[in-house]
Image (cartoon, rainbow, N blue to C red; front, top):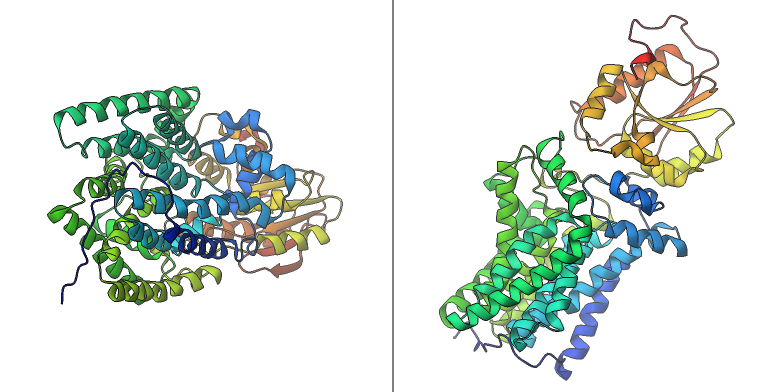
Amino acid sequence: MRPLARSTDATLRAYTGMPRSARRPLLLITLIAAALRLYHLGHLSFWYDEAATVILSRNLAQLPQSLTTSAPLPFVVAHYWDLLGRSELWVRLWAALLGIAIVPLVWAIDRKLFSNRAGLFAATLVAVNPLCIYYSQEARGYSMLPFFIIASAYFWLVAADRRRWWPYGLLASVTLALAFYSHYSAVLWIASLPLAMLVMARSRRELLSLFWLDLKTLAASFLLISPWLLVFVDKATTTVSVADFWIPKPTAKTLLISLENMLAGFQAPQTAGLLATALLAVMAALGLGVALLRGPLRGMLLVAVNASLPVALAFVISWLAKNSIYLDRCLIASAAFLLIMAGYGMSLLRKKAAYAAMLATLVLLAFPLVNHYRNVIPNLSHCPGVRPRKEFRQAANFVKQNLLKGDLVAHTCRSSLAPFMVYLPSDQTQVVLASSNEHRLKIMQKYPYRGLWSSKLSQATLPIAVYDLPPGYKRLILVASEWDIGKGDFYSQEKVRIKRFLDRNYPLIMSKNFYGVPLYFYDLTRPVATARPNVPTSSNR
């Protein structure tokens, strides 16, 4: 029995319209993608990064100074989006819509390179991909980046097909620039996209034609991003060479974990995750192997380069620089290209085998999706910088209901500050505490970006020592929440030291815990001990 169906080399077809046979299936797939991304969209409260987006987006004039490692476009979108609503669902909706829009884009590029059947399989895989769904439900730039990268690749491809730069080459330039403004990881595809086009050349003449297309497209892109280049260079060089950053250096094992995260999501249980990864990796390898043997090699080379080269560049940069930039969420566009490969490989199977493979994939991916909606992460070591979301909204509402004149809200870690700034009244005084002036300086050294402390959020993030509390407050409401990296983590130890000092010096009025957000109310008017510890004074601040 022949395992593979006949492959048609549909690379660079001139016709780009949608066939009738694709309309209903693609509509159904897009509706499934929408349902998965809109379900529970407003269920969880804002975490630090999302709340920071909300706060910093309110004053666009301060963006060049207040942004650290973030690109500006998500904040600009959030600024105008915020004019129509401020609920969690509404604030995240623009990210979800972009995550939904990726699905027909993937179909379009897969159909143009391979076939309509391959496009529908790839669109389905992107629609149910747990990593894409997770970051489509977060008000950050992680769904913007793959949307604009895939769009740029498509327009670039059409421009090459029609052998003229206008207007599709211009659209490729604009979308590539928008990808850069969405997330700085787009620079990885600024390298891979033009190279992927060049490797498709079948003759010296075509190579020269594609080279000029690349040159014009990149020149227009750089012209569009030039107003922000100096800001980008400042932030990028600080991130990779100065800051005490938190992303671990990648290893060979990291690449395997990235493959699993891209294909099955980091919330996958071990067995289901490994099986789903193995199945989809085999499909991608099948597509690559068939393309190498009997075509369509050119289309597969374009996809394979954009799937692998950005990952390799992030890996190498992370080892050459002082600090790592390697994060799976910054490589989601590579995941989309990898799923395009898997979709083509699945389309090569006979009908029953292809549907069986897709059904098995859907069953296996149901497990990480259930964990996603339950806010469960089985293995935290697979996702640096990601933790189960805490219930800041309920905790902040409880604080708001119990606020009295003369209350000071204090945080043991900056991770809870931004959400509380969103949920509490804007005139409520909040501070971040350090257990000593020495640790206060250590916290500041972790974030040495130029102009970091210029925004309202950053000024509030500037820590003060717990024994240098500002005078005139009657109660202190301590929010003792941290990243939960481990008991030996700096902020976990800080929480213990800060609370120990307050327990020793002030009476505890009440306490309450909201799903990982403990609250402690202290009476500052009746100190337990009058003697101050032998520590430096606030003059060091």
